[in-house]
Length: 378
Image 1 (cartoon, rainbow, N blue to C red):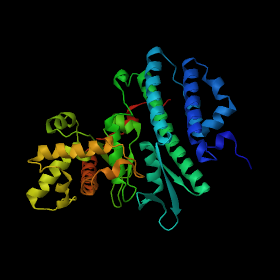
Image 2 (tube, rainbow, N blue to C red; image 1 turned 90 degrees about the vertical axis):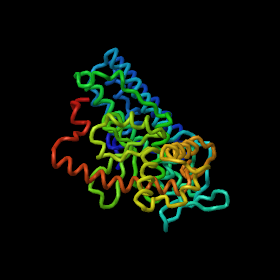
Image 3 (cartoon, rainbow, N blue to C red; image 1 turned 180 degrees about the horizontal axis):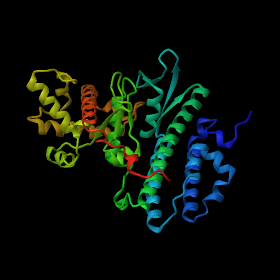
Image 4 (cartoon, rainbow, N blue to C red; image 1 turned 120 degrees about the horizontal axis):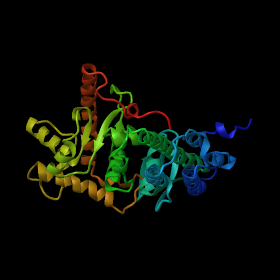
């Protein structure tokens, strides 16, 4: 039995070589629908079966429910916001600058990838993430290659749909007077800060998949860049992680001091990592990175400030590295520093979860979700 267009949640490709062309067509279709919304002829565009088949029911459904009326200011805000989220969508399937042949292993549920004479294990989620860094994993089996291409496409479409849904609520909030400062909401998916978030997510996911990018609404309105989940962590959606590439203590303090209830977040910056190492040394405890971490720096940092700067440089060099690797730039960060990040976030996540529970028990509703602040009409 053939499915109707409304029953197909996401489009798929039948050949991995079609991924780029499919992504381009989806971007053009979204841009066409946005232009039709501005011209108030959206219903006619949605009546096109080809558009609905191309976008799938999840994306097309968002435009079916787009009832907010365009105004000059709202059109300007929405155009910028949609362009930003389309830029992020493009980055998920852009043509890789380096590709690595891979063989799927049923025993490890991962790809075996040869790189400079060594064999590396790459999970499916890591292969998807590698595309962000313009690194392609090419399975030797055609069916596995199609599966991976669709995994990349569907994950990026899921994110795109979630972002457009959030933008829809932001538009209604602006129209209803709940978001008067809409002109101040900007984000840049190509910024160094976003690259650092992705690098940290890769490091946290090195051994097991536990970290995901937070939703757009959480990022913009809840001071949350990543969500992390661990076995036994008492948080349904995972602990909130705020990530900032700041190696200067004064600047870090200025950027984080205004935030209320900091104790319910994991705040990950080079400054916080340096302070954690100092606390371990003062307590005579072993850090997660071990004594080997000192070999990661050209010179011995004299104090916490120098250590924070040194850690910041380690992350910056990894992000700026032009060397391609099947796992992206993650392995440009020395192993002791990666272990430090993984252990710090895991420990802080459980502490933050306990403090969140205590705060909510003490003051129910003290931490409202961003959706509760905005009206639901799209």
